[in-house]
Image 1 (cartoon, one colour):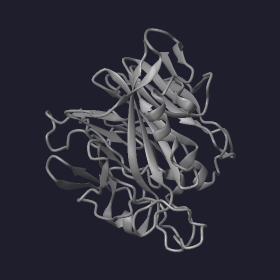
Image 2 (image 1 turned 180 degrees about the horizontal axis):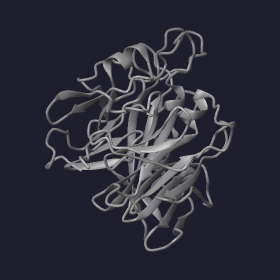
Image 3 (image 1 turned 90 degrees about the horizontal axis):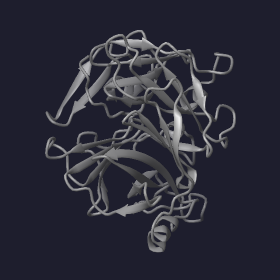
Image 4 (image 1 turned 180 degrees about the vertical axis):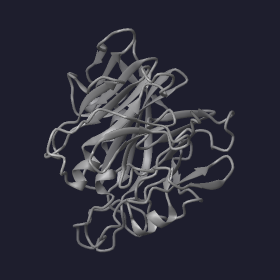
Length: 357
């Protein structure tokens, strides 16, 4: 899902038109009024064909942009709703669904990572809401969560330093924490050194969880915060680095969770699979079933929402919004989407698996 061409050019968030690019057909569809009645809406998640959006008053809604169906969720905002626009865009870091709403809507759960309302250094926490209920915090042990996924009615939450919690939502009024892995091993010392070699002032890392063929994968995404003309990460404050360019994804690394051994195991390749990462619930698809996608690859979108309009070092409003592409796990190289060229995409794009209901 992309903003309309006009919206992307003018950054008019009141535009309710959205574009949808089909990789299978290599065609761009435009749906006028896809966000009808939701002018200035901000999307915080994409899951099972539904979007989780915040309207201009920070009211949360579920929206199916294909069918037009919508469901209002309970308010999740702890302060005066005359809110700062940047807070509205960063307070909820990610939202996902356990399943697509159907029937009388009572069969799904929405889970979110939230926090950093007034303090950008505050840890991110978890909360959930069942249809017809209210938001309830999950009192996890680790805090500082970076990603969540639902798999088999269980919520997997990845916290800082590689800690994992699993919350079971099956047949209970309140989820039960069934697994609490405190900082599993990242494998061999060589693997660990390869991850830690990136200098924090030149690189940043974003982490994701993905369910793929029944396995839980941890995917790390390494970005150069500023690049020189040769595409190398640089310190923008160092002498000689006057000409630098916005952040870009440099590489990914993947581990598989071994629950019995309580450790992460390095994954070198994903044959016949393609991963889709961003603000959406992470997806793994078969490239045999969907041959339009490249196997052993990661398709990613820019989900650094807090820096899309960041002003730094002469970038004006153009620092973020460019970091979209395809990563070859075998060749360890990133290439841009041919379809998007070098567009700056704002508001951010989202992967969506269309659901007609």
